[in-house]
Image (tube, rainbow, N blue to C red; front, side):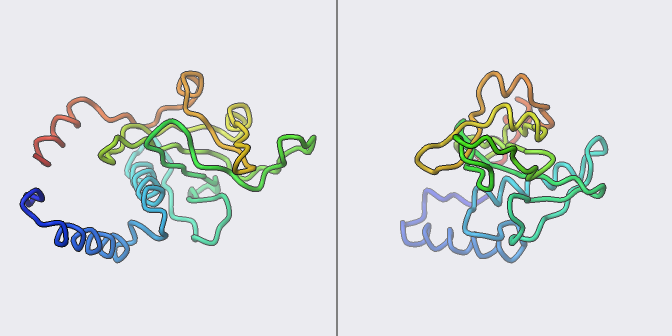
Length: 174
C-alpha cells in the first residue's frame, strides 16, 4: 500500500474519486450510500462464502426494504453502522397506529464497522426480533434499531472480527 501521508491534499482527494469509480465499476457500491453499499457487499460475500449460511445475491436497487435474496426465497434487509443506531425503516405503520405491520423482510443483518471501516460484526435478527427491538425515530417519522446490549444478546452473531484478524490488518495497512 502506498504512503498516503506524502501526498498533497489535491492528489489525495483525486484518489478518493478514483477509488469510488473503481468500487462502482466492480459493483461493490451501487448507490451514493457508500457505507451502506460496503456493508451490503461484505454481508452478501460473507454469507455466500460460508457453508453454514445461505448464499445471498444482490436485490435490485429498485427493491424496497430488501437488499439481498437467498436461494430459498428468504429476503434480507442489510443496515450498516459505525455507531449503535441503524438507518430508518420506512413502510411500517406510524407508532400511533394499531395496524399490524406487513412483513417487509425475513431477516435483518446489521453490519457494524469500526471507525476505519473494517467490518467488526454482523448481527442477524429475524422479522419478529426486529419488531420487538424497533424504536421510533420521531424526526424521521420512521423506525430504526438501537444496537444495545439486549439486541446483541438476542441477535445471532454470524460474524465477529477476531483479534488476530485485526492485528494482521494493521500489519497490512501499516
